[in-house]
Image (cartoon, rainbow, N blue to C red; front, side, top):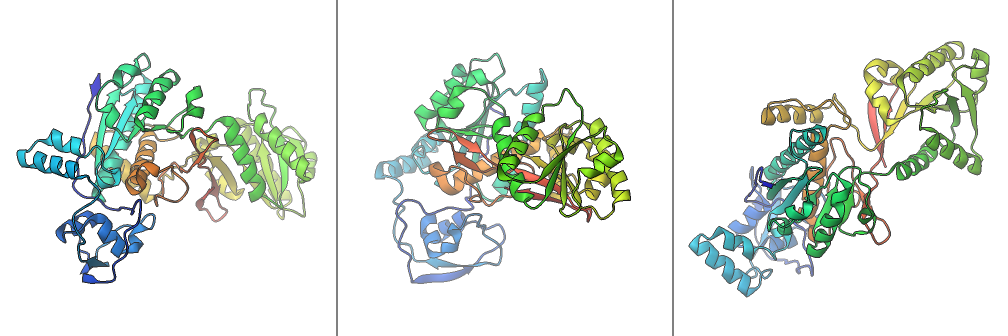
Length: 468
């Protein structure tokens, strides 16, 4: 059953990109306009009898990714060249008639074929939105983040129409897709379960709808369907990416692998793959053990190169022992240069190990990072409490912030580039709060997120993120 949670129908458009055949730039200006507070490109064009394309053609800087109209800025106002040619005569007549009789449904239908850069972005959410179990509660928080992104985009003048369906694990998503509003979506966020992918993927292909799959899914259609954007990265792809960036970042370092005697660890896939690559490249490395004597432990470290230490476990007890041994080594050999390279779960240990993270210049690879001390994080946490009268879950990643980043990135991208948006690096001009996103086409199939970062705790007691 369809749950319409909230609908945003907004009046202004913040940033448009000239599409198709660019209009010739005029050299005769009607006037120079100084932008006032809360003015938008759409509103200025409307007030001067212009199309948005005409205004942008007169001000080419507006086509740059990430451009935003600012108070006090001066822009050129050209003479209008005539009526908006983007709609057919039949479409213009249909909308005019709908407006005369106040027929909102008719007006919406008249806009169905309009480039989405000239109308609201239609977002569908098909996730388990309930309070029955953990999946539902996590996805409700994720969805709340989506709604918060829509609010933020509204303040920038971007119109969004959001429709949400509760699609639990036992639901037949094919029934959900029969709702006529589903076919009108520009992007559908979901599903959460692998068995629901095929019906949604087939539906998206038939209706030319983009599908954003935010979490882990195992279905063949994820790999073959060109309409799918897959945010989640498989462990194999992730390890290969981390190894490649490690080798580049730590060129000139001596790598020390520490065997932690953890029989439950699955980190051997990463450490073995890295060692194999290093051996192929002739890169220096050594292996020691947490149970080694102080003398044997010290022998593994280079006195002529900076050292980077890697454990073969992500567990906290072994990390604590490793820090104890490294602190002892630093006391006896203070001139040694030592950094550490860890794992995403180390973020959960920051509260207890922050001083050691700074001291040993720890790098943590991840596909997400939320800086709890940043003003941006504080603002979104506060807004979440205001809007929903609750705190976000204590989880990594933070689900509401994940939903915010995903929705903001995609809606703004679709607003700027329309159907041709494929999510490459840097084109949206949005700095994520938590989750970096940039996509690459895999063969002739899906678009796969390649966003990756290293979180670096510097000896100067600062936290920096290195984005790849």
